[in-house]
Amino acid sequence: MRTLVFASILVGMAAAPAAFAGGSFDAEVAPFIGGGTTSGAQVTAVSGASVALGRDFEIGSGGLRVAPRLEWSNSVIDTKTVHGDTTTLGSYNNMVLALGGRVSDGFGAFGWAGQRVYGSLMLGRSLSRLSLDTSSRDASTIANYQDITGTYVAAEVGTLLPLRSGFGLTLAAVSGLYVQNQGRASGSFAENRLTSGGQLALGGGDQSADRALLPGRMVQRTLALKCGLTLFF
Figure (tube, rainbow, N blue to C red):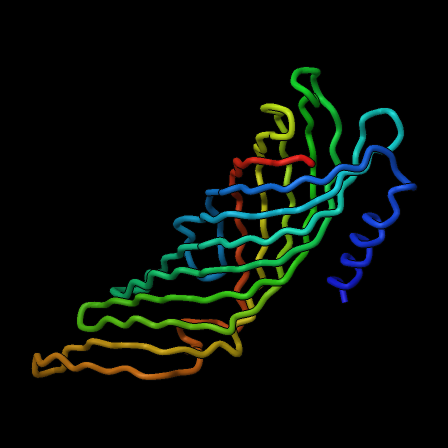
């Protein structure tokens, strides 16, 4: 329902430029890197990239602009959990489609368009895969899960720096929140274990989510720095 509402706003504003002045489109490609926290595990790294499309509409003559935006992103969140002599390294691969908006204002007077500062809010849905590498003194297990769905919210503050006519540099800080639903996750595992007799036993197969390793709900908070290129047209 939220996605339909934001999609309606996006289409409506793009189709009715008469209500605004100075409408222009932009496309942004931006890698990002950072860190974060998550329930039940330590986040060791966050990295990824995003692709966004938007349309700016100038409000009045003061330089203030609003822009509905559509964004696709792919992020990798690496985690680590230690319980006794057992260490689990995890890697979430999150694909997100989000809709939202941005408000920006002019600041400075250099370049073809002048520097702009902005703030944005995005809401979306995520589809994730998870790899877990668990090791202890006498066993190691590699498990891969899919069908992890969730919701995504992100707030962003940054600046747009003009480089040349039609191109700009985006510098921003992005705070993200992922709420992962892992209750229906399924996957496969491979296990190596030393028996009491010192023999190496191999195992593996398909499995549903192991609640000892994969709680039904996971909350991930990230903070990343983004630097990318923006094309204006």
